Image 1 (cartoon, rainbow, N blue to C red):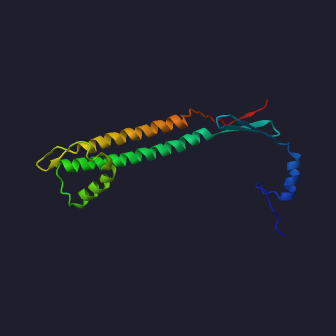
Image 2: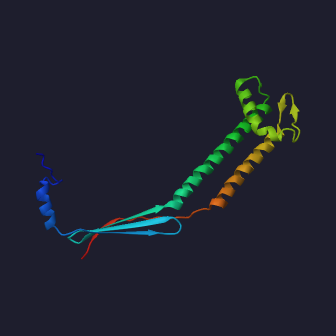
Image 3: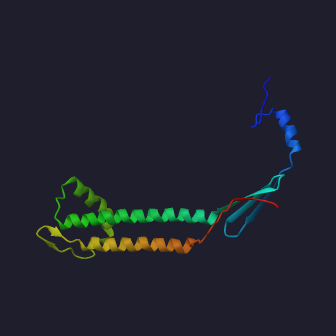
Length: 176
């Protein structure tokens, strides 16, 4: 037969007798939910000797929602940044008269053309000695930056900025 022991090394049956002689432990828990998604819990444990231990925890659902929104907005800026970098690289390559048959230049020209299609033919592009200043590409960069900024501002307006603060304190004290 296997005998179970408690953490103090006392056989389980004897430990039950010892525990029954110890003063009882009192435990209370309080849960408060506010309308803005903040849930506060407080748990108080008082042992038989009068020592009190409090644990407070705060769960902020609004703060979690704000973090998710921030991640989405970061993805928007990442996309805008990639588009801006592609178009900017194209402007530089055209300005220095890079060889369009080069693999890198070919990749940049083809990839950026997708985003520049609505802007081609908008204005002329001055050229001199093989160098071209693509004014429509510069206009496209400004438009994409403005659209990205507008999306971010609209998201803040619709989903709102949540200002939350949480404090958690744990302490022990004895009832006197």
